[in-house]
Length: 171
Image (cartoon, rainbow, N blue to C red):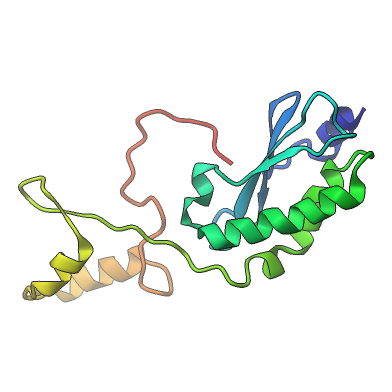
């Protein structure tokens, strides 16, 4: 019955994804939000008498530090213990949405950058920073085009140079 309720509540909601009848993904926050994360929840056979399995191992969560993931899981486990024996998925999802800011308050994005050189060799960002290169001079038209492509912070939008090899349904 809880499965039918979840389907009707989150029908058309891009934050909710049913992987299988016992496995779900729920995105807390907007895609562009740096403090967004995805909960992977799987029901064991004896659910709701036993706690569901909660994971933050989705690729989307790779930018979240291990400490922050542990904090989120610990807080969610507290909610699971409080609701054990009853249908709790909606409660968990809504609690996570309401408490996103407190769960992610110590969040520091993990950025792993690798620079590729012309010889297709991988170099670390620290070694690339040691070498000082002359800045390329741009014309006014080139600068104007660059400004039009970037957001208010001067950054290109996420995925501006991605190539669609295979289209996969992602939140």
